[in-house]
Image 1 (cartoon, rainbow, N blue to C red):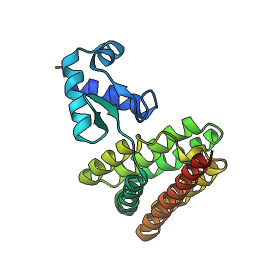
Image 2 (image 1 turned 45 degrees about the vertical axis):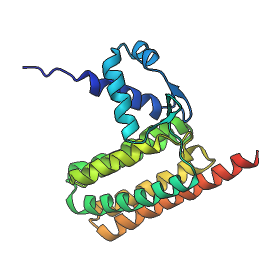
Image 3 (image 1 turned 90 degrees about the vertical axis):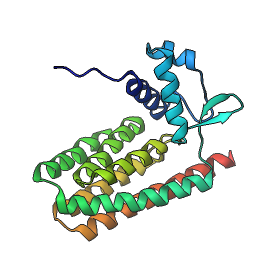
Image 4 (image 1 turned 180 degrees about the horizontal axis):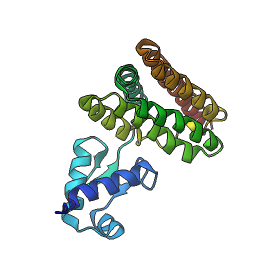
Length: 215
């Protein structure tokens, strides 16, 4: 017996993906009727999805309108601090619990993603898949749920740090180091490597923002 898909879940996923890929950017207004027409979904599930996204602070009120939320400097710093610790924990647990097959998938991802260094948008999507694979390899459902929320909030950043000249190549080298530590079952090294990877990404983004303010 086939399962019936939830239209609310579909609407939520469609809007979230549109924010994630930059169709809707921070500050953009989301109109119920326009979303329903764009996605071919009735207005009720769209309304419920918008309420859910507002509850998760991915949308915020601007008068009577809902707009895609934006992160100020302090919010971004807070997000990266939480992400650094949770990602580090995921890497430590992956080093302990990942199956050989999961490790092989991570190794293959690094090799394949090396081909995307000159395409920041594609590399950003691949980067997200890579991190999600580590989350799953931790075999801790509660950690996966928390990291999923963190990564959803990352979509509120209008640009990717991987767009900075040279960052893609460095990030890929860092990914290889993380996977090597997981494959060696070195929990401490894996956790530290991933935490340092997030720290470098944060510093890169801070420099990116500072440069944008100077223009």
